[in-house]
Length: 307
Image 1 (cartoon, rainbow, N blue to C red):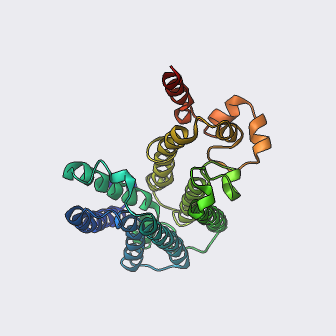
Image 2: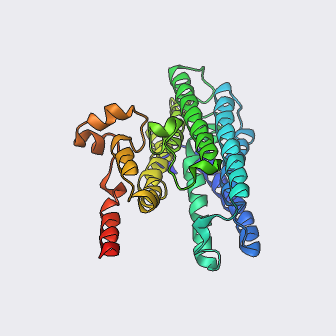
Image 3: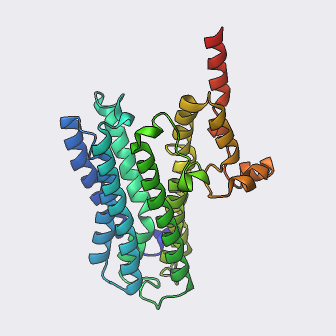
């Protein structure tokens, strides 16, 4: 742990890993035994709460900075886990596991990845809380703290608002077979993910306010949290899967194609502005990646059906 500049950080990270693995293992055993999907996302969100609280209470120092950051992480984790639990109870089975429930190893792989997700994303708060007062965790609050809190607040508002807007949209029978394009979804195809990414960058900045005097490696390690989350949502389990699903369901509809052309994939922007932007701006600055374009497959399928 020399790169971190102190054994206290290494012990804090090791403790959070052991806690996370144990936490996920308990819920995995329940889910695998009863083939029960409804605790999966709940286990993920509440694990954030557990890690944040344990790192705070056993870290050796409870400064104002640490308490605020812990409250932010716990608020996000509790809200997300309860929302997702309510949603799965409402909808029934989680279709993500239709091809995994009967294969123990495939099912376990998901839970292992969830443990890695929780541990990696909680790194900044664990380092802040678990450093035993190292660095500047107990220093007076400064600009980075306030900026981080504001960014977290903006991201939290966007994520919560968009989640409930989509839930209300899908619960309305009149919207059956339609894609959500109301509220924040009019300005972004995935505003909930934009909010989640934004708030975790805010958490990092707030934690950076307590890293003063720490080894540079601590800053780099902390940045893994939002970088991992952003990469996960942009390239792996977030936008790619949902864009593919939406294109498959609605790609044959002209209205949907127009919606996709004028609506930013992530960042919230007015459609009239987004539609007029140069292609390179959309691709490299606003993440309109070729990975999200499945229209060619949809058109090919239509041609095969017509033939």
